[in-house]
Length: 318
Image 1 (cartoon, one colour):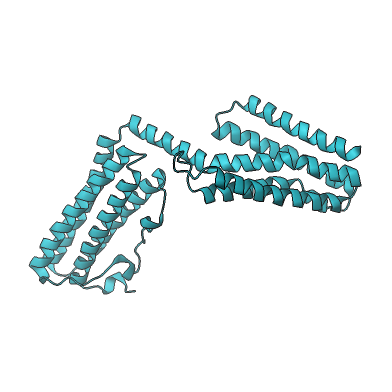
Image 2: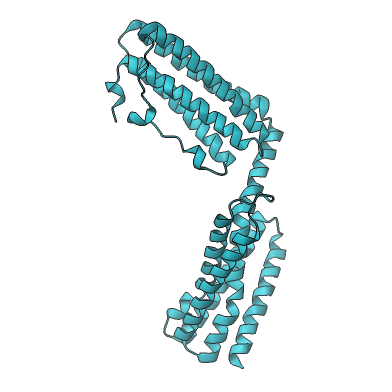
C-alpha cells in the first residue's frame, strides 16, 4: 500500500475515476438489494448511482485532456487511509439503517479525498481541477439530501423504518425469545425436581446442563427446519436456528449454574433468584418488541413459570 501523499496528480485522478466507478456500483447494489422491501430508498440509491456515473464521465474527460488515454489501475484498497466498503455480494440481506449509514460515510470520505487532493496539488490547473471536484462532491452530498427529501418523505421513511423493525423482530427477536422462553421455563421442572429429589447440588447441576444442552440442540434444529424463510421473509434458517438454540441453552444454564455451589440451600435460593431475573427479562422483551402490555406479559410469563416450577418441586419432593 502507498501513502496518499506519495501519489502523483495523474495517479490521484486515476484513483478518483476508480472510486467513482466503485461507488456507483455500490449504490446500484444498494438499490437492487433494497428494491423488494424498501422501494423508496431503492429509488434514491438508483439516482445516486446515476450521478456517480456522470461524475466518472466528467473525470474521464478531464483525464484524457490532461494525461492521455492510458489510466493506471489504482484502487482505494491500494492507498492507506481509505475505508474499504463491505462486500455486498456476500450479504444475503441488507439492513436499511446500515445501508444509509454506509452511504453517508462514502459521501464524507469522497469529499475529504478531493479536499485533501486539492490542498496538496502544486500545479495550478490540476489544483483547480481537484478543487472543482471537491465542490462537486459537496454538491453531491446536498444532492443526496435532496433525493432523500424528494423520494423519502417522512411518511415513507417511517413506513420503511417500521418494516425494518418488523424484519428485525422476525429474524432475530422471535427465534431468540422462543429459545429463551423454552430454556428458562421448560428446564425448571427437571432441574428443581432433581434438586429436591436428591438434595445434592452437583446432581441438580448435571441434570440442568443435560436438559439445557439437549433443549438447545432440539430447539435449534426445530427452528431451522420449520421455515426456510423464502415465503415468510424470516431470514436464513441456519441463523434463526443458531439464535434459537443458543438462547435456549443460555436460558437453561442461567438457573443451573448456581448449583455449582456446594451448599444446597444457598444454591437453591440463588437459582430461584436467577429464575425471577430470567422471567423479568422475557417479560421486558415481550413488552419491548412484541407489543405485549407489560402487566399482561408479566402475568403470562409468571403464571407459566410458576406452574412448571411447582411441577418440578412436587415431582422432586414426592
